[in-house]
Image 1 (tube, helix red, strand yellow):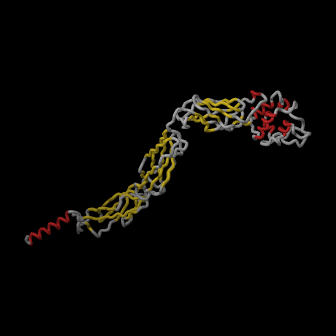
Image 2 (cartoon, one colour; image 1 turned 180 degrees about the horizontal axis):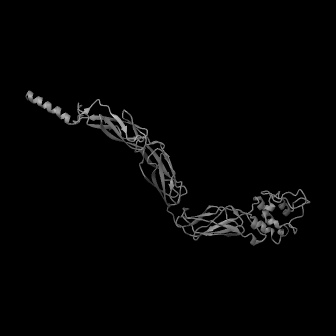
Image 3 (cartoon, one colour; image 1 turned 45 degrees about the horizontal axis):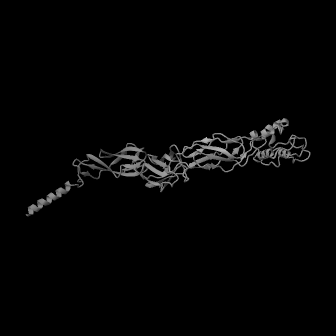
Amino acid sequence: MTRRQWTGLAFLMVGSVGCFGDPPAIGPGDVVTVRVFSSDSVLALGDTVSFSAQGLDLTGAFVVGRPATWESDAPNVATVDDNGSVVGAGVGSATITATIDGVVGQATATVSLPQIAVGDSSLVFAAIFGDTDPDSQDVAVANRGPGSLTGLTIGTIQYGSGGSGWITTTFDATTAPTVVTVRASLGALLPGTYTAIVPVQAAGAGNSPVNVDVTFTIVAPPSGAPGMLAVIAEPGGATANSVFTTQPVVEVRDSAGVRVFGATVPITASITSGDGTLIGTTTVIPVNGQATFTDLQIRGVQAVGDTVGFGGHRLEFTAPATMPDTSVSFNVAVSFSYNVEYMFGLTSTSCLACHSTFSDPAVLVNQPPALNVTGCGTLVVPSNSTSSFLMQKLDNTHSGGCGSVMPPAGVLSTRLRNMVRSWIDEGAVEN
C-alpha cells in the first residue's frame, strides 16, 4: 500500500469517530439553543437536585463561557438559585428556566412525597378449628417515591362481620425497605370465613394508607354423630325469681369428645336437685354445636309454703340419643320481694299484720327498732345476721327488755328463719 493510501485511510477513521457518539465540538458561534440537564427531575420535599444548562450554536456545537440565569415558575413547589440548585418546596411540578444570551431552555422539576408500596396486597390464611394457628406471612414494604419513607405503622385494622382482634402485626423496622409480619390467630373464632383490612401507613407518605386485604378461613374438624353433652359454662348468679346472671352453655360432642358443629338436636334443661321450678326458655337448639341459654331462673318457694331450699341446686341437660350432663352444684340467693316479704305475709307468721312497713327493705336495713327502749341495736345489719335485731327476735336470742319473740305465736321453723338469715348475710339486697 502506498503512502497516499495510508493517509486516506487514517482520515476516514478519524472522521468516523466523530460520527459515532463524540460530544459536539466546541463552537465559536452564537447561542441558538439552550439545553437543561439534571441528575434527577423528581425530588422529595427539602431535597436538592443540581440542574445545569448548556448553550449550543447553529451547528450544534457547545458554546462555552456563557453564564446562565435561572428561574422557577412555581417557587412554592421548587426554588432555584443562581447555580441551578433546585430545592423541593411543595408537592407539584415547576418549570425551571435557564437563559443564556437571551435564549431560553426549560426542564420540569417534580416534587413528590414518598410512596408506600407493598409486596402483597392480599393475604389468605386457613386453619382447622381447635388446631394450631396458621403460619405467619411477611409483606415487603418499599418506597416507590423520592426521599426516605419513615415512621411506618399499622393503622386501625378494619374487621368484617363475625369476629375481630384475630390479627397481629410486627414491623422489622419502621423505615422502608422493611417487612411487616402478619399473624392470624384462631382464638375464640368459630368455623367460617373472616375478613379484615390492614392499613399500612406513614405520616409523610403521599399515598398513605395502603391496604392489605386479609382472609381467614376456619374449617370444622371432622366429627361423628352427636353422642354426648358437656356443660362448658356453669349457671351462676342465681337469685330466687330472677334470671341467672350467668347462663349455662352446653356443647354437643361426638363419642370421641369432638365438638359437633352441625348438631341441631334440641337440648333441654331441668332441675335435677334442689327446690323450686326452672322457668324460662328451657329448650334450646344449638348453634355451631353449642346451646346458649339466655333467661333461665328458679321459682317455686311460695308453692311449697314453709319449706324452702336455696342450696345444692343442679341442672341436668338432655338431648335425644346423647349422654346427658349435669351442672355443678350452685346456690340460689334469697330474694327479699319473693322470699322474705312473702314469708312476712304468711298466715303462720302474720308479721305484716303489725309491721306493714316491713314490706320495704329501707325500713329494715340500718334502722333502729321501733321501741322506746335503748340498746336493742339495729334491725338489719347487712352481711351480719348475728348482729341484726330482726334475726335476734326471730331466733328469740334478743336481750331482755327488747320485747318478746317474733312472731308472738312462737319461733318460726328453722328453714324460714334461715331464709331471712341468708338474705341478711347475702348483703340484705333490695331484690
